[in-house]
Length: 118
Image (cartoon, rainbow, N blue to C red; front, side, top):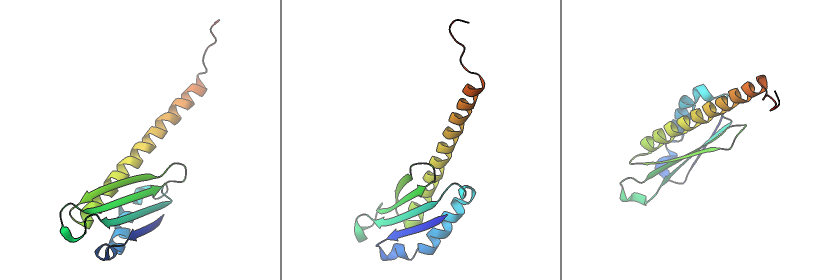
C-alpha cells in the first residue's frame, strides 16, 4: 500500500510520519485491498481556532472507485482518526455488499429460471 501525504500547513507537515504510521496501522487488515491511501490536512480558517482542522482521506482500491472521506475536528489527530474510522467503515460496507451480490449471482447460476411452459 502506497501512502501519500499532502498539506500546506506547517503544523500539519510535522505530523507526516505519525499520519503514515496511523494509516498503516488502521488499514493493516485491508492492506491486500488498498493500493493507495492519500491524506490531505488543511486548516480551514487559519489561526483563529475552533473546529477548523480538516482531514480528507482518499483510498483507492484496484477494482472500484475511490473512497473519499472528510472530517473536521479541533486538532489534527482527532480529524485524522475520525476520517480513518469513516474510511474503514465505508470500505467494509462496500466489500460486504460486493460479497452479497456475488452470492446472489452464484445462486442464480446454480438455479436457472424455469421456462413458463413447465
